[in-house]
Image (cartoon, rainbow, N blue to C red; front, side, top):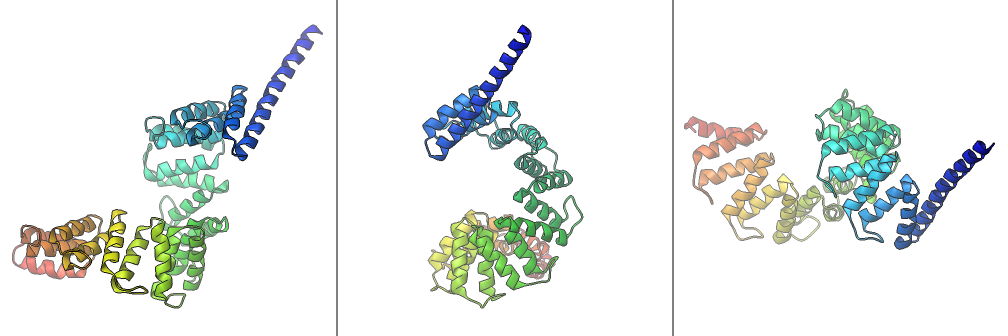
Length: 391
């Protein structure tokens, strides 16, 4: 009887200890909800010390955000790690994110992959999604679209909108799966119904192009509007394009300008370029080459080849800027390097005429050929002439 009493006492002590940990966790959550981060830190710390994995994770999160404590990725890593070791899937995921983005630790996609696997195996959807992304990009693992499909599908089945969206992209492009616009449409619809803006935008693109669905600019407009209203820059840019071209809506450059501006303000390179083009042409706004130059420059700096090309053209013609062939050459070269055929062609013109560079018909011929290889017919015609003369 004595042994039984001791055993029961030990069990009760263990239960009380665990229960106290849960109590402190709940008090911490309530304090955090009320923006009392100092108290939240106190309670999460106590919960963690009593063996609460979630308490350790929340404690680490305070360090990650710098709430109630001095911000420290290193401390966040310590407590995410402690929670992960206790079997908390979310904190294994968070620890993986720290390794992927070099926060408080040396960057390691391999380590991130290990942690995402651990998290995914515990059925944490974001862990599966991030694992799929590593396989898609070939980071920390050999690129493998089939494996990416597997993990995006697993995340999607758990209700992860990003997983469903990226799975849709794989079906649309036929990567790791048999190409199917119909399947892509099903997945984008699912994502859009979850109020995920990217899914709505991607579904709109299918309706605009008539891929896997009956072509409908009206339906595309509806979906782009929904995406834009949820803060998706691509949706705003695509909506602006419909207003520019008058497809599915009455042509309205003022509305186009509104949506391009919204997209540009969100950091969308195409939106900045399209807005710049409206200023250049004076569509929906007064013609303003200086404003066009600012927007093309912004677009170019964000990696938009058309923005770089048009910026080069402004420097060639001296519109909105002082004419400068050296600068024109710089931006045509940048556009060309990004795969813009017109950029390669105009760079060829620069070398052929010796504008801002030492004249070189040999370089010009190579650039005209490059432009043609990219699909620009003018490049073929001009290259043919240069080839005839031995260049």
